[in-house]
Length: 288
Image (tube, rainbow, N blue to C red; front, side):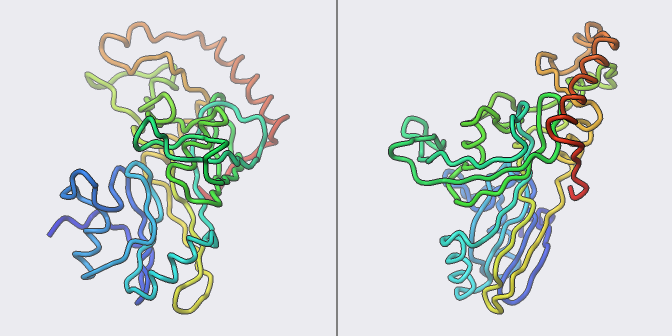
């Protein structure tokens, strides 16, 4: 039997299982390598048989819902099909958003030139809707709350790419594959031969899920705390505000040249904070 330490159970009854999935970890068996550990197989070993209602990308953390019987699976699947389930994500995205909130409605379809990707297609794409709200604006990134109305593949990732603000870490739709503390902390001191990243997976977390219980029809709402890597990155962004992407990860070779002007940084930081207070007001989420 596989190790069960990937299963962080938020709720269980006779009909449903609500799990906080870690990342990187598969929701369901991989198409090319079905022997890879995944949440569905672990739950099947624990409960005999479970039914997949929806799933998250391997590198996305957060809430995943499973049914424990066919009737519950049918009722929950119907809710997802009718878009009556309320899904709320939190994400870190690149850049400075022009507005505090918005709704992205670009139609989406599978990218016919790149398998496993989604693209905007005004003519042939399916209707897609993603609302967002800026929780905190940093110097060159933002912490946002995201509410996808539809459920297209990679919808959040493709929609934020389309408006010029891809996820902070997303090699498929953005640029960056990892973030290092030395790219934020000006006086970073290397304590090992090579620096490890603060985070090296999608900056996306399925935070809240609301749906009608399949047996009692009572509305249930569940929230999943941020995974440790996401929480740590958010803490350092709140402290340092700016990511210097041109700075390479720190090594014993690069450490001697990592010297910046503190006076220049303080002036730049003050300018950005003044802009934020005028454009957004002082916003900070105490929930996450």
